[in-house]
Image (cartoon, rainbow, N blue to C red):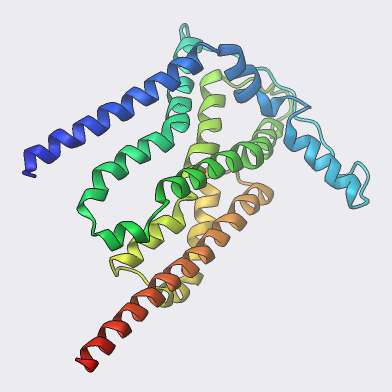
Length: 271
């Protein structure tokens, strides 16, 4: 294919991806109460699954109600005319992106895969499902773990005489920041796999870089969470585990490459 034929083909995949986002986004827009009262405002409700799970865990380990807590009560007040509508559109778009992510990545893979060799396509079989699963796991982790603790920390951090009443724009922005970046960060093992396939990184490099990676992980955790130790720890631990998984993934790629190289040298020697 020529350059312009590639551009034309890419445009088709992009248009189909945008259409998928629009379809899911419209469905989200048509269910305003479900989107806001159940999803977006979920961490404000006392029956949110995270709070119930923490309380159950507290009783299971014999701590009674010590780990049980209720969300901080605060009101959300729109400050500008049209803010509710704009945030509704904003939330619908991001929910459309999250819901259509498997299809979007599938379209991306259909564009890229014809340029790969047969053995390369076999080596990454199931990449669409794995990437989609990791992304959705990251979003769920951000929604059920990071968001409730972070929102309660921010809402409870006040001064005497100050009434906490954030804008809808502020609340939605933080909810987005707690979920979408986490979904993308969970793709770390996939990124490491492809970097190892093209020879840019290996397990030895990642192991030697581990101490710097820990610092980088702490910085990332500090950026996407409020400045409290609990939230940063909740983010930092899974990020570090993902880094260790990335080391295992690159080690597997290196072993397969060495095995294939050994088989090739053996054939040459016999010849």
